[in-house]
Amino acid sequence: MSDDSQDVDNIDRTTVFGSMGIAVFLIGAAASYWAPGFFPSGSLFALAGVLILLVSVTKIIAGIGCSVLSILFGVSFTIIGINRLFELDLGIVPGIVIVLASVLLLHSINRLRKGQIFD
Image: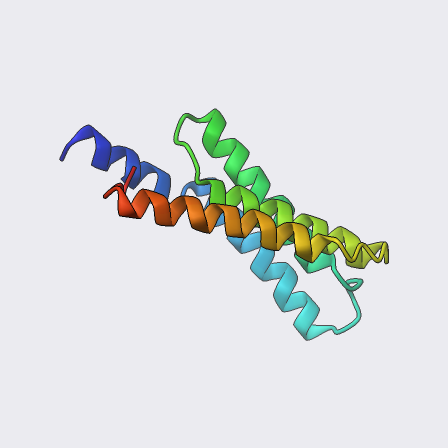
């Protein structure tokens, strides 16, 4: 295995922190399903976003690396959750997410055209 493929494997591999984050989210989601109205609207989005960001930051600190997409999802979910929790009515949030995701998509398509599948 070359060093490049090992780097990709490290980025894609689920860490212990990632598993813990998934477990915490599933507990919250199951509790919300079991007792509707227990969590305020938007709390699961905010929880998911914060957990994704925490796992991403932990992976960066550990030197494993993480994808821009996971950070984008974390930020998006956190903003959407906070928007719903505090009823901020930030109608611009979906537009910002669409623009950021579109830039990421175009960047990925450009990399694919250059043959950079794993880089």
